[in-house]
Image (cartoon, rainbow, N blue to C red; front, side, top):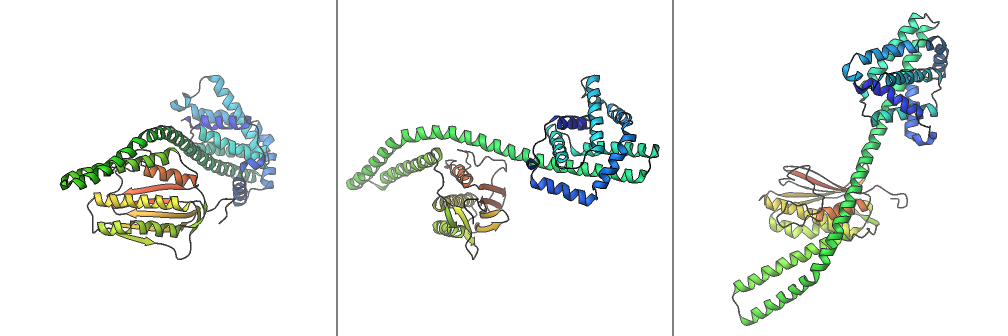
Length: 427
């Protein structure tokens, strides 16, 4: 029960941190807090009531805190988190200080800053919200009991103000929990993206060096194979010899394609953005794969909006990405031998947070949802380079968008997500 001890630790940390400007809280958090005050009907009268109740109750804060910690120390797991009696004494003093602030401070921006910091400290130390609720319940019960025992004038009004104040405090902490958890998730995503960029950069440097070293002798080999084929034809060699040369030439061309992908991966160019129609991108990509799909007995269906679906994109490069993902879907269907029943759906649509292109196939799916399919050189195809999706993923991120996928047997969806707009490029 790191719980209750951590609750007061959070109060201690938060009260010792200098308060930032109110603007740092963010408009949303401030508006939410004001909405909570209206919802709980907590106003200046409640603040005045709490302030008047402070003098008679303040002398009992030490007793309430002592009882609070008696509950804590009854749980061995909770008692174990304290290093010594001196630490327990400091935490008791911290909780007394917080109680004085609860009764005496106006619920203004400075108060909200402090409350927000408390919630963030709770998140940083891993304190679950349920323990915060339990700790507030102990304080609510003890404060109410002391108000009754002291027979204070207007006791019922004081209890109501205490209840509303604690509810407001608790609701504000929950909001700060949510904000802090979101920031933690975003920071983790940023770190993951930075690590990915670092890995890509290191791999790209290696790939570029290899590509340049291999390309020249490869071009020479291709020229000699072309010359050799012509000479063999002139000499009237049998078809098996010509076929062997063709196989060698095909493999050389495949390596050359891999080198092109390596260079594209190693030396990425920033996208040349212009306002374009994603529906047109889909039409061009669909037309490029139509004959291959028809020959394989795979049905290619397109669902495109009647009005232009505009986005700021590098049209030719995004078209190549869509063609690549469509080809991956086709190859997945061919590998599963579902010709005649295979289906690929190509969609352009507007989501709530921006335009997107989706490619769905009814193939066997990605073997594992955790497969690192966007990592360079990862592939499930015997002849794949493992670079196509990695290059596509980076291009979408360079657009300010994302490339995502979901996969189960019979339904694999790749979604190319584009930003709704940017300040300097309004839609």
